[in-house]
Length: 455
Image (cartoon, rainbow, N blue to C red; front, top):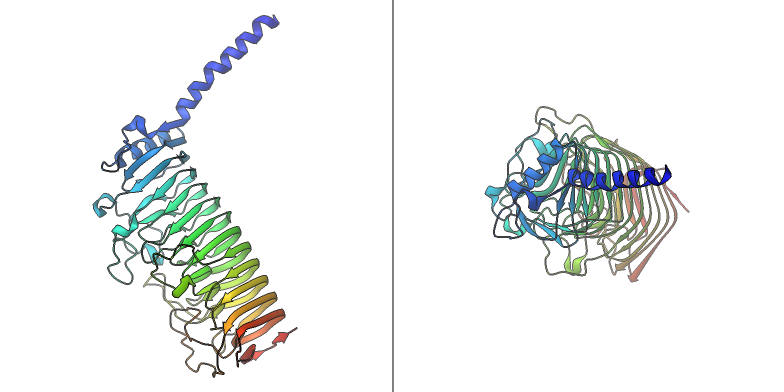
């Protein structure tokens, strides 16, 4: 009996395996895609995605080769797998992108947008593999200051999606923001490489009103902001962990803001290296030599709240004003029908175990608004080594509370370490500031600040 049963079981297993594999993997070549950047494969790729979804889910395989596409739409339970040697190129013809709208109301959804890969309300979606997605975004010139919607495509845009995974792939050259996750839940981004320095508004990563997110092992080189948390609707960015990343940015390497209608809560950042890009052939923002504006920018300017933010184990080289904490009142609404009422708040922020080298001479700042101070911030075990060489200067008299927040908005600050204005209960514990060239400014200058502790 044993000799009869064993061959039967083995035969059943062997015969079943190919059937399962063929049902689960949808190779885009089988749907008419061609490895030829002079021909569009948009329809073929979409057919593969739709067939995979209709079959109950599985994998859409992008094999080794060079494929050109316009807008494609991910569906439930579909994984887009880019094989090693595969490159998905975005079309350089704006007519190949499909304008879309969503009923999710936010600052960035009031008009149609275009993107290379899009999903709205999808669950259990993934992009993985060792291949590359190249948006070729330089083909889409910036037409106005706020034209991120219909004239320049995002590379990835996910709205109200859940159980999202982006793993292993290389993302390059978006027309606008590289990847925008809006109101998504349970997002995992791991081991990806991002190069986004071919156009204006070339952020590397934007998490917008998302919950339960992990970002790890990302290497990012962006002309605009690096890892950015936003809140362009009343939905907070909440329960987010970012770890073990290397970031080059001509603007702000780690940023909470600028849009803050809901705010930020329970944010942990660990083990980040911030450095200038090794390639300075293209620069839209920033300073000579590839210095960015700041390494850490924490902002509430459109209402909203910021609380329980812990940032540690950060190594920084080459930013003009490394740390910028800003509470102000730009009051930009996420919808014209919902004006911002009241100034937001910042409290419960911890920055510790941070090494900063080759910083510019501008200085760092923690600033609030009269009657609305930044509260309960601890900065511990931080070393700042900066260019120095500055004369004593007075504190700014124009507080610019309605302006776009930027760490360098006041130029050279009155302190070579930190200027504090409208703050309560700020603690500096083992914060060392070293100037490369003699500097006449004190380390700390505080105006309208109570409960300041320096150890």
